[in-house]
Length: 366
Image (tube, rainbow, N blue to C red; front, side, top):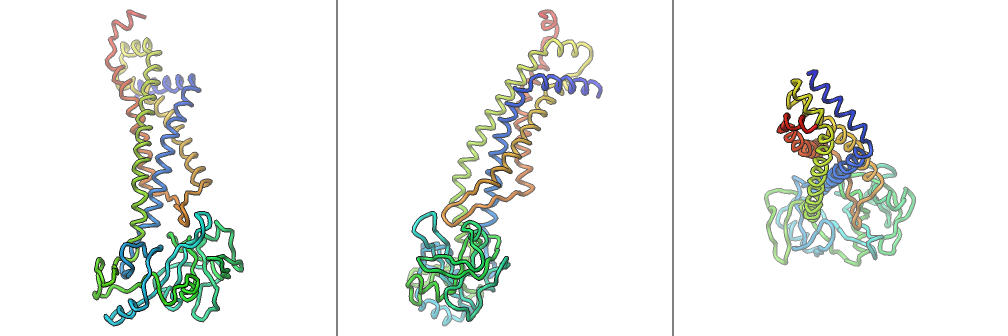
């Protein structure tokens, strides 16, 4: 143990003697660690917000469309057909994307005021929820939409050129926090759809099943399935970025190997003397591991700070969708494990080199 402590102190002493080099290497590790951490917290955020399936509800929508967002339009006759099939509850809704550009696009949801509270769980942060018998042109907005547009209770929100009074701001914890909810009748009038709707939501009662097709190009899917499709669209980009991060990590590990080898080479005479006085190869490895550990620890701290600043100050969004970062224990552990692997990889080659020094030749040359 005493031998290991000696080599650890020697390693830390040399590390402090080369502060600039150690700091530069720590910054390299911080960048690699921060990029991986940022990538993982956003990937977890996408999975958390866009992959929830409703266990008890099915979605009736136009085939080849993302009915839960936009692109589906069904006539009222479809709703009548569903009722005639014996389905106990047929809930119509309108889901559309309004706006003239990516900057002012808003996810619109026209809801059945009698039944919408059965479909979604949400909490009212301010104001009240929409209720049966409300006057026209009333709206509820998700808190993320309200924050991005600086909206509050009593303000108006413009939807397709028509103003709606905001009576409530809600929080759902999913992508719906980016939506504006209005009554179904208001949405039909706003879009000029007469009695048409985007989707029908029905309970799973064994009459229709996920994957069924109805005449007229109508599909039955699980409520929330479209969200998984949206999440899947991000996956190729995330995989590509992960390859970039892995390549950066390999380059960082090679750079760490080179630096540790050069530091060990400067101490090759001392290492040889310690070996001749009884120090084991394992204890000498502590010399390099102390330096690698010090550089890596500083890199992790800087990388964590960089990650925190980035996810706090940078808003990652596409039109009407905000990707919310989410940190989970397994994300932190995987990132720390990856950085530890970089440290060990950068240390193994110099340690192997130290263990194979020809002591007699090295002492003679000195």
